[in-house]
Length: 419
Ligand code: NDP
Image (cartoon, rainbow, N blue to C red; front, side):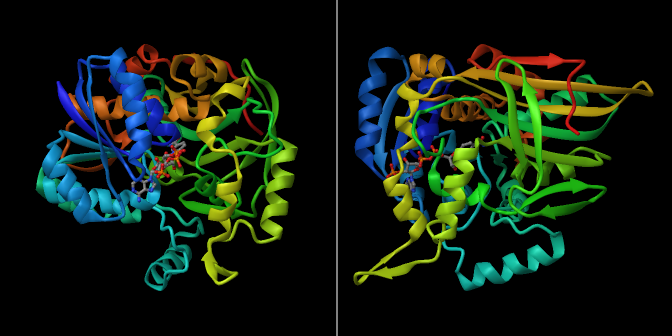
């Protein structure tokens, strides 16, 4: 029995909200609060006849901590699920802290304005000290550890698929299959086709920032940075087939490097088709991926935000996307002194997701674990004071709920490895 405040009402939130409504035992009440209240109202109208969960809605600007505090005080939730954008992570954490309410998210903090001087000074120092140049990192949220601990509340970071399920797969592998994990390759394959020449599967701004950045991986205690898309591999994905995949920097590498004792190497690969890469390069070359504002006919516009307005809304891809995703992790290491390799993965079908909740598989594979993480926190199955990445909790109840709520997983004990 619990009451959840959900911030954001986009692609991922839509799935998480559907799934909360399938789990009315835990979520007796939810409040959907976002910038555009009409979207929250439309979803409430669609779902309320199908569920015992009592749904209310609210308008909130999640960049404004005071507004968030007022909403939390009024609604009195047991926890806040942040499925807005990574830009709002810190304001929402501040509000949770002020109201002593648990916090859950799916992506680590990154600033909306990467030209902000104060942020840039800290960022440039981090680039030098840590050796990776991504705009996002965990330092901002890990800095809240003591404050959350003192307040007696939980912050669960990264309860999506990657980070999220991939991190839970790691904790599960460590608990049940290995004495020591030596290498982790996280493979994110989208074998889906939406029929557009170019579109992104989740928020275009966040997606394009991530994919056009330098790649990096963790090896022997430090980061190795690569040029964007410099490292390419081919992999034959179960139920999807042979795909090209490219090494990217990804946020769970940062936390897994700290939380998996003795791990020697962690890499992250994502599949891209040639058409996606050619479009992206072209947009980048003409300056459309820039986050710095420019003057246009007397108005200031941010190129990547203008591009977002032109591209298909990821939430609208559901009806037209066919094919499957396959996301998982290949682990090598030792058990009882013997070398061992396993691959834990989930396969998700875009059209099946659409039939069930009206979304494509990328939103589905993120929204389901967002609900599961929130349920485990609300039900106090996961109950620790402080700020934690998801792999720091017992993976077993989460793995059970993945099977129960639409993301069944497979353990292959004799997989193809990545060169
Ligand atoms: P969308 O752009 O579809 O949705 C974002 C939502 O947040 C929109 O409803 C938007 O409102 C709302 N929002 C934005 N700014 C504010 C604000 N200031 N105040 C209140 N609401 C606001 O994004 P997605 O659903 O694709 O992504 C949601 C999150 O999930 C992101 O953080 C993304 O990084 C993360 N993600 C994580 C993955 C994982 O595996 N871990 C994978 C994919 C995504 P409006 O409708 O007005 O625009």
